Image (tube, rainbow, N blue to C red; front, side, top):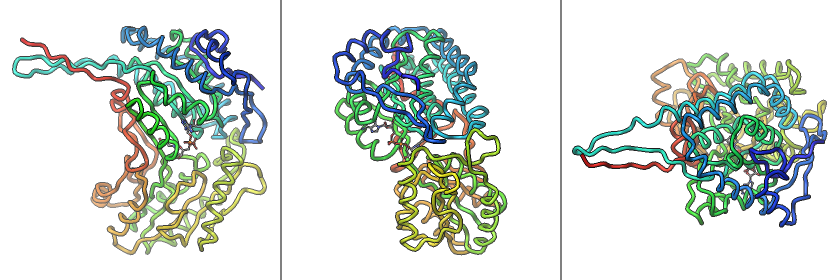
Length: 490
Ligand code: NAD
């Protein structure tokens, strides 16, 4: 395996060439501690990762603070140019990034190659261009000019999960760097690799030392001290609700603004007037990434009269789903992230079955493939207030409930009946109904007869416990800025 330094600076891949980090790291008890990163595909060890602790957290924040004045003062055109250079680097190494990401998190290689890595580069270019488009917001008040400016806020701590590691990180890195903030990224401990490769790319692209930093390690050991550090001015987190609570409490001490993208239990509403083939395609799409998608519409709510016809179409499709090695072009569903995660997923399913649910397909691990592969599962006979309907499973597990013929109120009541509000998907042939229902749903994104299409300039995030704030376009950009209004007399 490769050794990966716990703290990476834009200057060098190795913490030894990073004076602040080295100085602090040698003073702590953790510099030689490591953990082993395994592939979910076959359990093979991939790398020994240096395991950061409070010392590395302090060192990274110190480096980001040192670099901040220089980066904040860098002219926008130059900052944007550097972000484009980083995007060039991502494109040049896209195939390597895709292969490493697939080995590390088990998602499909073809989607990393064709979708994800180009999108990471696009995210960087988009926010570089957004930066250059700023500055036209002057307006007049009784002859006085209001000039609005977007001042960089300071060091930003970005904490990300394992289900789409570099993609989710790039939604935060790109606007933070474009805004003039310096960045400390703490990737998930199950998927550390592409973050460190990205640090190499930023260094090779010429990003000044300390502007982009990666700290590897476990959440409680290094994530917690990072978010509690008084030098930090922004925290952006994607992950689970319990972790968000801890981060919010720590950030509250220093009154640091937080942006949270959290879990979901989103509905797929299938009305009797829907194209049922399309509705079934949408249902089966929810197994993508082995169900490890925050936005996944895991609760199917189908209008009673079309239940059996719809279910028939879904089961036809599930039979065709190829599960296996994510590097194989023919594979539709790869492994889940970790044996511990499989146990968690299976625990939800076992308890649901004990409570009276029926598995019309799947219902357990894929015994042929073993390890971390879980069968695409669909459970019927589930109650609205049951655990399986209320809690995020984050695996290839869908539930199916019905609502009475013509009863939109009941459809909406079920759809809105969890503590989440991330997304909702509707299948209906009636545009007026789509508008009516969309207006009543508690969700950050509503898709009508489609799923997952997302423009970077649109707001993205969750209501209720699915999040705080929105990412995307100006919503991301403004979060990383301290906005200022300068009023000048005539
Ligand atoms: P998690 O909350 O366990 O971990 C996420 C990150 O937080 C990891 O990097 C982890 O090391 C870190 N962390 C853990 N404890 C910490 C602490 N005390 N202080 C600081 N950092 C800490 O989540 P996960 O299991 O990795 O990710 C899955 C979750 O992420 C699901 O709930 C999923 O819905 C959610 N998610 C949301 C979105 C979205 O955009 N809304 C996208 C993807 C995933």
